[in-house]
Image (cartoon, rainbow, N blue to C red; front, side):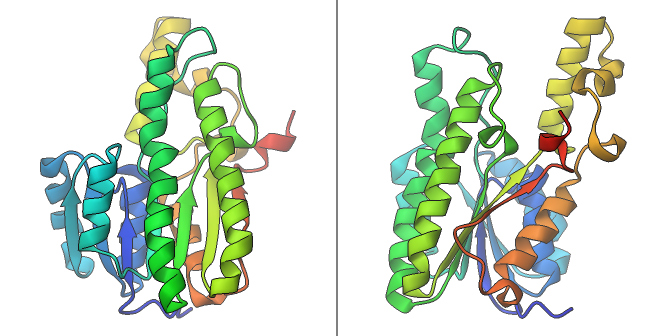
Length: 255
């Protein structure tokens, strides 16, 4: 299926590894031109080198928890056709386990960072009456958990933001939607699961047990999230906006 993305410019934040990297790769396979961002310039360059055989890849190294860095990124790439917000990982911990400063610091990147980049890019997209914003959020916003309350609340805020803005952006001929991945096979999830298994069973190799029963008996794959994001960002899904798609294998309804 031709997704009509050839030559389109795409900005993917948090794309050094994991879901962000997979999203960048999937857009490249459709003929798009991609800009990837990350805080670690060395890792970012290595990722760009790995992907360069698929198409044109530019990099932007910077800490997008800082508003000045987000503005610098926008100044360098203000005319992108698609913005994919993916940067940020909010730490686990219950209401009493995280200091207020940890809430503030983690939301600076994933919550306020998403909102700020949306402000910047949507103004430009609105002016030219064209563009798509994709927010990679997370199932904890839809199915909140006490032991991940900071991330649950942050994701819930982003779900509301996406729905509200996406409902209005159609007036500008611009689409905004989100994706809620369930736990996905990334290095971050691997580290978290192994730590849980070590704490619970004294054996990090028992990490599948620490995660509990999973739909289809496995984690989601980054490529599965990425391919969905790319298809929905394409003109093939031109009537979709203000929607947040859950990708959890039905876990939310399994009790």
